Image (tube, rainbow, N blue to C red):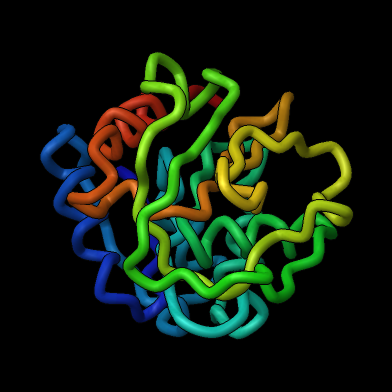
Length: 190
């Protein structure tokens, strides 16, 4: 079972749809409707933390869930979820320097992890005003993708644990390789 934490975002059910189409049994839990013990009792095999409004510190149980499950099961953060991974491991999330809401950007990546076999660069849709700061990436994490026009961090991963974050929206129809990216995540093992 894949646990999808819903940060009260309309894109959560796009993620649900794509992940279900890829064969996953997906359980959605709102970020303020369960404790870590209740999430643990669900025995998830993967964790996806959804997009959402505001700052990751305001994302309910998201940061705590990332810290709890990291190293035990594969973890993917999308947009706010990506930022929550940054915060969970000591990174800094602040203004991105550019406001992107429903705008596309070219994403350049390292071809590893969730980016394996994806076009490089590819076009992806962005909805954010915050970003993990380039001078404050969480210790031990590597930047895996950037926007070609501004260099804003669009992806990061832990090199030893199956933890990946993407700032853009793979679940948007405007991100053509989005479903392939999610399939790559589903192939990751703890």
